[in-house]
Image (cartoon, rainbow, N blue to C red; front, top):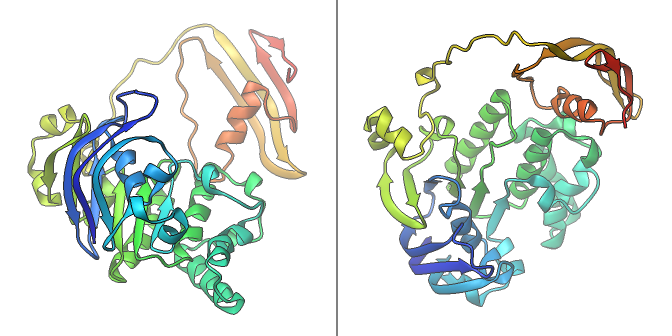
Length: 330
């Protein structure tokens, strides 16, 4: 069980962003709690209190008590908490310690001094549950943002903690990967795990979450069940900063197509990474004032394509033209 008792926290630098006050909340064993609110309202701060990063890593003024499994987090080391609370951060790169995927999944278990044979069994079970067999024995540096997020989830899952804390876990995932993340959350819930998720995307969690805690300027102002949140008028949810609870509600706006001068043109562009073909036969032009969305599944090459246009990706072939003039990478 997790209990917040009159908790307030202000980061040391004095910024009001992420500040929380007068937090009183009990999260029961096996419960899935979704923490929502606008950016800077304190969602991430609550997760850092549960996993002990506050006060052991992030400094500031803390009052009240955060009790995890009967222990005040102020009185237990981060190492001791790591066996109970598993964390998945918004940017997975911040929690990696190795250079390849298989070693990263094993790393947390190794630090808990788990037997090598048991670690191998856990890796096999975790990889199967998350459906990431194709990501084993890969360089972490060669993964897309979404693939890195999957490895972060796998490394925590293999440690088999009682509590999972996730900070915007879907931020870098495509639709298919979000469905797979949802399946993992369902399995954790079926195992009786306690799950706390700070998230902006709501739709994929509406049939998993037991309660939805709404933060406004660092205070808990509402606690909803999923059904209660659905019953709120859509305009009220939008004013509160909630995203759609059902993607069927979302209708695209109609926009006038841009008709300005052609500015950027790519001719027969191909992108590689360490002799591996990423994209090829790219022919596209962009006019002044045009907005172009680059979409595709995790690992399709969206980030590599964007880096190439910026001149940050070296392994390129073909022509990049700006206002009709060829541009080199620099």
